[in-house]
Length: 283
Image: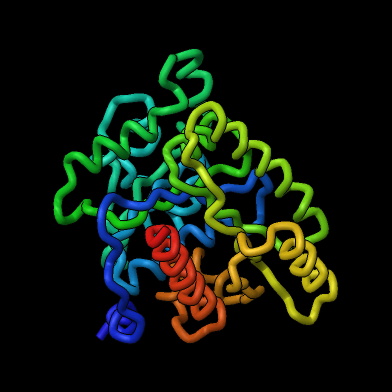
């Protein structure tokens, strides 16, 4: 029995019905654990029975590399999709994790804004690509979650992600300037909601790199919970060396070391995300 089979047996949850829920992982600050969360939340959701597609919109392509997708094998990328040269399904490749696929990125994405210029539909390229994928869904592409890994900036790529999404999931590092960056992101979300995507909401804020021995970490947690209330997930992602090591092996931490505290945290976060979805559907 593989590691993922073991998790599936222990944590299995019924896959969500209907169209996929599209969540963007966004924060204009770098180094907050955004890509790490995309990889490991996607893996955890897949491990408990969801069918997940990660869309890598970061020109650095770290989500693709962290899932073991070699740069030389990215023949069709999210860049090709956004400039209209390929459908999204052609960019999707399988990962070593059952029920988890990824549309990989390349450095070509960094020039997208200049290439699209003032094209009228430039903010909706990704939304249109995902809609087309849903129409042509097969058993292999009938996703229940699409997670979009955004670049660490508020540019056309991030706007495309937000215009295509149902909600934003915000990784927030437990550090001094956390709330300052959060307020800027919330303003951007509000702008996108008022101009491009009225259904957009904040799904939740996940506190990352938490160190319970650090007074600053604890103070940041208290401040963010006071400021954002129930939008903050109960699950916090701890500082954990195994989480840091896993990408260099092209593996999610759940595959690299299932029993470490980082893996346990991401499984809890996946469960919490699904519970929020059920609550939203019930209302």
